[in-house]
Length: 305
Picture 1 (cartoon, rainbow, N blue to C red):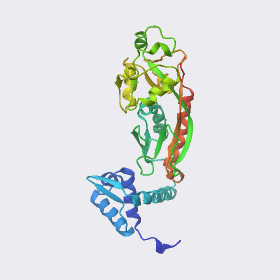
Picture 2: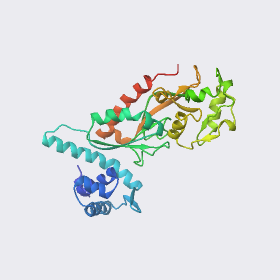
Picture 3: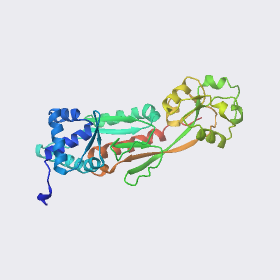
């Protein structure tokens, strides 16, 4: 090993890593049982030692610079190695602890993930879990999340991705709302129905028309914007017909498919992680648990009768 190339203090690296993982100097200080000014000085000292700026300070927030993102990828492995050394020296077995951030869409977060997170908490009670609820694609490379559950194959070649399974969406409504439409036997009977819209109704219109429905703008007089969860609650309130996965709909006694043989819209479930998956026992453990727990929930869901 070239010891001359090591031009930094490990304590400074530890302060930087704790700040990255906990999200602020104050949280890092609590984790390391030091004062916030001490952590701030150590991070500043590391920047001086390496000759790079690691954080942009925007108000009270710290945002990793590109140099900070690159360094975090390297020092995270150092931190885990240091933890293993401590455990080995004390004769303890390695436990999964620290924090993990998982990003998932609104509907899955509310209706599917509670069962998954319950299993995760049981297996790894020392792990702090942050669920980032968003319908946007969080940037794993910028550390907005450690793991993402997505409905599209990621295009970033630096991400590690696994296609877990395929879920299926269909059209749902309350029995009371369907009763207001009279007898419905096929797509042609929904000309006067109200379908709940989202931010962009074009894809919804296209999906309906491709399966035989004749619909237009007047069938979309109520929209819930970008919120799929509000969309779902409005359907449950009897305000119209909405889209939703069978995984969620089959578990909700308030809803029924709008037809005995409704149109089906399959979509993939992808599990994605940044490259730290290869070196982080924490991220690997959670990634593997999600890969184990999610497919049975989709596979065992009861489809439309």
